[in-house]
Length: 229
Ligand SMILES: O=C(O)[C@H](CS(=O)(=O)O)OP(=O)(O)O
Image 1 (cartoon, rainbow, N blue to C red):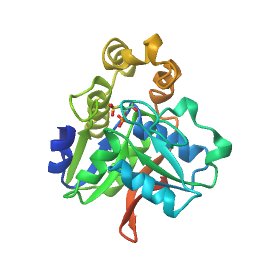
Image 2: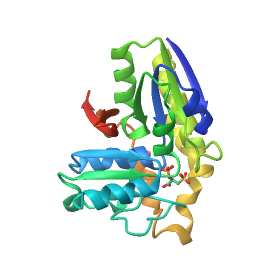
Image 3: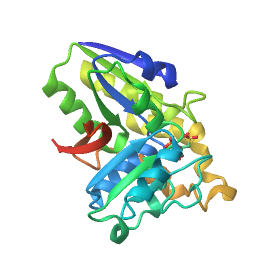
Image 4: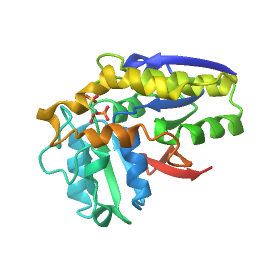
């Protein structure tokens, strides 16, 4: 199995084989929590105007996501797993757009298949890859706003690669690095309304979920399907 770690949008465009688009803070951790709250479907989109259009055509859809970390005008939820409300999500189709994670999905056009990547379902991702036995695996770290690499996404890729290669991980050490590095933003008092510190713990809750989220297409529209492992 060839395992490549790639970075940012350019990495998503180059990804081949079974591709894991990784966004720990917060898109693909939040997507897992939304499924756990009973979301029936998540449609990941890049262009925010497509989110508004889908809502116009389907008033029942729930808009979720961020620009500059914050909830865009007219959205039901931001990108914070802490601020999701189960009762408003259960049984609903969610349209999700973010600055990094969902951009990776729409740009990974050469991938054979795409799943999302985060620590909350890292073990399930490893198991899924082992089951699929692909020749090539691309682990794409989407970073901050697709502009620069982040500790949490790069370490998540290394965690998955190590597990697949039979190398043990020191997750406690990884959390320390993330807390001092790119995860420090969750402890900024000025950001607590949209990026609360509870997001840090929720997004780093290793193996909380035993499912993967696979990108599929219906009527030419991408959606995430939950596959229990
Ligand atoms: O909502 C977030 O924390 C991030 C902000 S950014 O994209 O890294 O600027 O969004 P996400 O796309 O989930 O990484």
